[in-house]
Amino acid sequence: MTLIKSISGIRGTIGGIVGDNLTPIDAVKFAAAYGMWLKQQNKNKDLTVIIGRDARISGDMISSLISKTLVGLGIHVKDLGLSTTPTVEVAVALEAADGGIIITASHNPKQWNALKLLNNKGEFLNIKEGDKILKIAENDDYIFAGVDDLGVYAEVEGYIEKHINEVLKLELVDVNAIKQSKFKVVVDAVNSTGGIAIPALLEKLDVECIKLYCEPNGHFPHNPEPLKEHLTDISDLVVKENADLGIVVDPDVDRLAIVCEDGSMFGEEYTLVACADYVLGQLKGGHTVSNLSSSRALRDIAKKHGGTYTASAVGEVNVVIEMKKSNAVIGGEGNGGIIYPESHYGRDSLVGVALFLSHLAHGKLSCKELRTSYPSYFMSKSKIQLTPDLDADKILKKIALNHQNEDVNIIDGVKIDFSSEWVHLRKSNTEPIIRVYTESVTQEKADELANRFLEEIKCFAKLEHQVI
Image 1 (cartoon, rainbow, N blue to C red):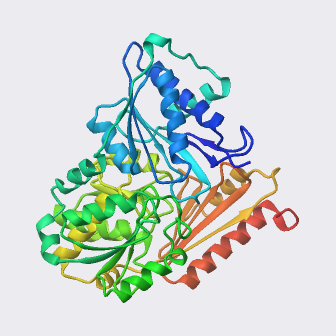
Image 2 (cartoon, rainbow, N blue to C red):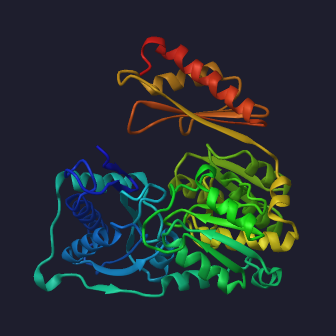
Image 3 (cartoon, helix red, strand yellow):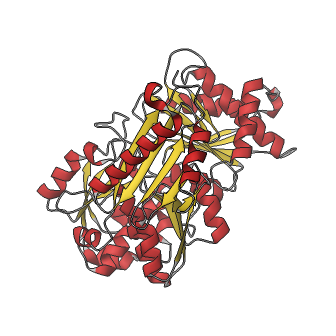
């Protein structure tokens, strides 16, 4: 079974059996549930939903099914066509729409697709809203419109350009400084819509752009998750072209990774750190937020500028909630997701690129020099699989109690902060797994800390004979 239902939407592999995979029936059912939820929230109101998709091969099919389903519910649809996740989020706000659906499976391979659901602010739904939609789908609780009350479908062009213009209007995006720097950049957009958006943004900034995998045909030339092991081609090309840096985005353009001029990775964790360094430096302080599994480096940068930092539960919606609560000036996640409230409350690689290049232009440092100026932390990510009869929550409570004299956070699993390192333990919502994330000052120490807590989990759960 590869159909995964959650508060943020539905995702799965294309084809197969209804209810087990993302089939046309499942796409229609979930779109109808979302449409019914909107109608329940907005009684006696003409509703408009923005939709857009990444370049996946299945995107056109899923988009057509969703749009016609919404029209059948009496909801008007504005279809942006090939787009990015942040572009759809921006469009919902600019069009004063009632919601939005992004057809993308983000960094998943090409056989996957998904529906990501937005509210009338262009932000992801919260747990309460998502649960209501799941219940509507579970009960098949739909009422479709009569022939005289069908919605209207319209294609809308040019929204990526509108999005770019909104980015360039941001006060801290120093267009002139970037233009004067005459940067040369290689872009890997994994043959999705970043191949449209990122080069267009760079063109308006007078940045020389060398395109790598920028044809939006949905045929991903490598694993689309922007991790070091998947990015050897751009690393080689950056060096060969004597470029200032490389820019990598995932298929829906909400994650940003940077490659230094020597072909080394800037580090996804440090994309947010660099952008926050620039923003906090310009504002002379401010509050920042990332999730519990993100690098301690953001906290260090906030302190450097006289700012403050808090951690949220994992998940973009949780980061946004904490950012609003604390009036944060920038935040995001350690996977290269930049959330800049002056633009909108969503991860946005276009905003990230503009802020990062502004930072380079102001600092007169190379990409590599900028990276080495930050504190170096190293992360380890592992997991332990439990037998289904074991209670992961009880295990985590025992670990928290065992370390009660340390700095313990239990808002999302258990995070324990030590003086120079931390560990974050979270249970999976879909399988009997506890994930173990650690960070320390060397890779060896991060791995040692992870192994220590893997053994502690086994001890508390008496897993010597129960680990699968």
